[in-house]
Length: 246
Image 1: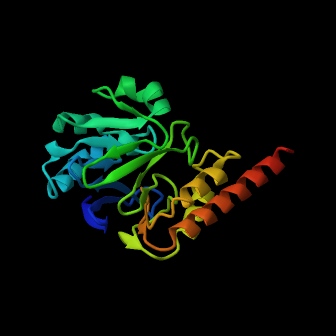
Image 2: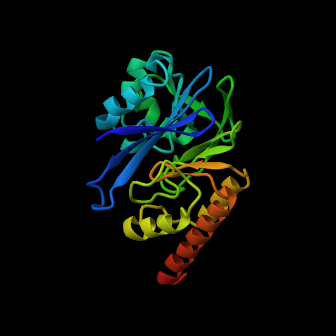
């Protein structure tokens, strides 16, 4: 395996590792994102077995010990499996996440005490500002949350729009259709009545770029893509309710 490096917005870099054996022959990409600034931030750490690849990729852009912030969508191996490896190589780094994620998992599992973020709280990276957004159970995990980088209007959107395959680093093509197909295959989302509203709240940020964890980053009409995804989840929730007689 190898890890690709691509700049998907100004000073925001995508590290992408394609794992072909997952849902073969399509495969699945695992992406992490580095937001450069006076206090660099890594969104997603990747699982522990990918740590050497991702660490070496980050080192091509900056000394890894400069890393200041580590955050991710939710507590899961591909999101934060190597957070303690990162804390070991970056002595000033802090894990930052929402109250639920910290209280339920990270205060115990992280080797250094994490910073608890309130919904809407800003982390000032120097030349960049990132805003933390609580998105409970969207797409799964009650501790789920995302990051919006305000300078470039980039939404680091975790598992939203998950799709299979090894596409380009950045696309203006369809990301909604492949995401619907992946949901049909894996049923990975925690369907709940609030999903559509939560995703439309993200669309209201009017992001210019969507940074997908599993799939290409998107530089097309991001609010429209989020609205279409919200509509599909509303449809799924209605069908699920009908199936149980609600």
